[in-house]
Image (cartoon, rainbow over all chains, first blue to last red; front, side):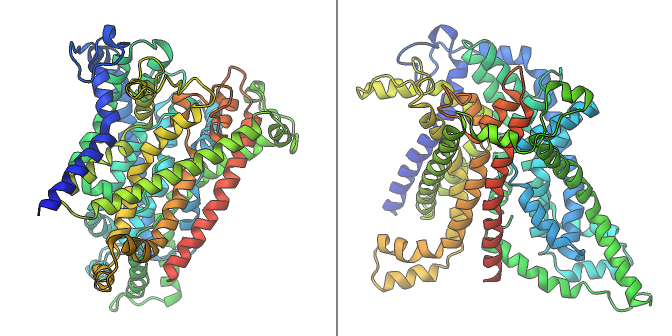
Length: 270
Length: 328
């Protein structure tokens, strides 16, 4: 038993090293401007200040709201498109289903910068630049292929007898999907929603290329503007970064098993 | 994308399940052909939204991208919609640019060094956490945090940590008598700096996948090897590692495809500089298309298409590997 606790000690040290940058982000967010350039820096925030967080409250709240909106919109779009398609791929054997699965696999390999350029040329024409909808659509392209693959993997595991029972009771295919398949697939719905939200929340490339001039900016652009303009206010930058990390932290605490499920199902992050 | 053995298992389920979804007895009698057609139509009705979506939001942007790369687009082209056809001229000019070879070399170094470290560290940690000591589950979950943070947050944090004068990394090194390193502003260090940040971000992904791979190996195998007198080191390299080969192959390939796409980290930390010293293909494409006041979309699209070509070649390899694993 003794050896086990020794392993725990090593594990804690490794975790501490791994998470040090996150601690440092919090530390710097609390450091006062006068101590910012101190050499060596303060390891803990003595003479700490909440000035950075005041700045966040004053300037970044609308950005946080926009990010929330975009995140939730992306979740809705992703679920609405991915779940029915996955049900069909898993249980209804559509002609050409294999080709579609393959195309979705390939779709995940396309670098976002290329999508951004394509979207830009299209959005210029349609007047979708600097709009929330434009960003929701662009962000959903990261999550939809992933969503279909996760749902398909899960729904193929639903026993055929369950669907047959619903059909014998006279349920239409849509009704079966809505009332039987979706409730049973609750876990994968959580996993897909979680990743769709996190990716949309974290997106910087689409936001920066497709929403450069708008008023409704997501939080990532809020941080980016800080870095660009007032290089000295690192406590405000890091305070914004801390606030921007809150959804990830909450989701990890509340839904850790769904996170792990997403990663091991071949999660994607670009 | 299915990487684990459980996914393979569910693929097999699929075939078993498929047989049982035939029309149930006792349904109203209709001609079998009409019934089959109806079933096909229903199946497609469920898929149609995604297909339309793929055409509109994947195929069309991709087509636009190819169109951009074989024409001479200027800012004016966006307004009046005209752009002369120039064939492969954009590709020729991109490939003869002074940024071409540096960006190819940087991309290669960035991708392979990132993957080598992410994988080695991720695997070592997976083996470590697989020992199931007290708190191992909690600590393993905490390791996921860097992977879930917005990339912009991680990149800004690393930027400040690697700051030449006030960064914690340099003051730590100074404590060991190592002089100041200009991580982000020296051409000889910038690529190393973005590599460090990217490796840090990628470790959790490798850890979780390799951990699930370890879970897929039966405990009996280890016991049998232990009874045969193999020590821990031998057991790992002769028994565990070979059994992990399928998971390893997929992890490395996924790592390749995702690292090729990395943009946020490098752009925030160095913008590809100084003097192209950390410019990868993705960064270069962005610089050409959006990085200056005079966007050169055609060249940017040409670089982008080269990037897709590389990704697709490896994507096809992935698909082949996946199929081989599904069959086995």
